[in-house]
Amino acid sequence: WWRELLKKLAFTAAGHLGSVLAAKQSGW
Image (cartoon, rainbow, N blue to C red; front, side, top):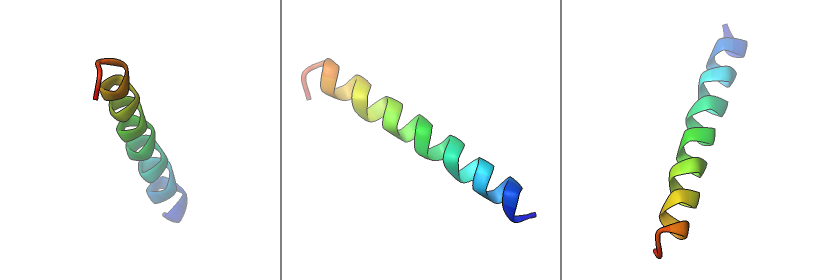
């Protein structure tokens, strides 16, 4: 079950990183 948890964690981290990068590009 920890693999599913890890996958979900990685997916969440990737989404967060993407929003951070988008914010930086928009001038934050």
